[in-house]
Image (cartoon, rainbow, N blue to C red; front, side, top):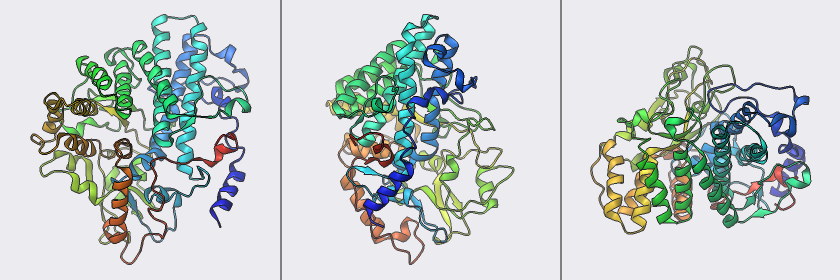
Length: 513
């Protein structure tokens, strides 16, 4: 089947899938974005005028605005932001067959035509972020007219502004130009906006984030799991760094440090959430909340990252569950030899980040694979865990600040922030070029946290690094988890670009694609 025929078929199959997803947001507040469940109202009783009135209404609404972030990070974003880089790859299972959606992402061979693609993970992330945006827009369009406690109102409004800004920031980094909706969509025509330029998107992202900073409380005054003024300052610092506004980044990031709301956990391994404890700890600036159980708040991303096939006994040895089950298919986000080699001798983060496990029935060598250890925590039931996903940690604030200072020629000021991160890792002062040292430090400090692809793109290294990475895989496929005698597909690393094509399913809604 040709690329055009394949895309046409997918368009027909999904034509009506998302036509009214903007309109349906009021019916989608299913579960809490933090620690409390939402009250579900009958669908026929909901409307903008009748629902959005009281503080309780807006609390439920902002809870619902966090919800799509859980799905985005549980499934597709790790593929787009980590496995699309040189940090992780997939573990080939020759008995299972093709899993093109994931492999195409890892192999930089995503089929596209006319700037659109039928890749399911691209679609999932795109639609998920617009669900966040739509829900935030509904809050922002109605909250000023509501009458309830002004501090509570400011908190909700600040969260909505942050979540909209964060969503557009990821969309801009992944896709470049996307439609920019700032008001609720009430019909199909209103959903079909033209693509906004990156300049327009970033101007709005900065405006929203600056407003959020002034409205949100400090971490010590906020309900755990919700965004804070420190989270908004960190987001803004990240945006300024992408836009190379180094002095602005320095100012806002120094404010995060000066707040004394955050600190590094003494042990690197403790920076990450347990299954039910150690969540939103002193190093956490913002993390996606999951909770083990039957309420639908759980994650399962650990299982996506296991090599396959793997027996029930081998799964149970990793997860500690009472009902371990065998897992088949194809493993993803397997640490590459490249990232393993990136750790310096004596770096404590290597053993805290990478665990070696056995998949005795796999077809690769002796079946001993590295997996991501950061998210390995004992839990009760197979495929159901409660580890949170880190979005921003304080160590990244320190590395952002070091980078913004080094870019301004302030090496003496930058070095202590970098050294603070390295000291916890058991390392001494860096050697060589300071800018390169900071870049390399980000790779190992933030490994497997969906940062690497964005770093490669924003520093202009993506094409060269991925080209070299692809050449190594093609030259030595066994080193990259291919069974002996199995060669990479003929199309691997033939479509290396800095941006993803837009999802084909959405082109039926928007003729501007």
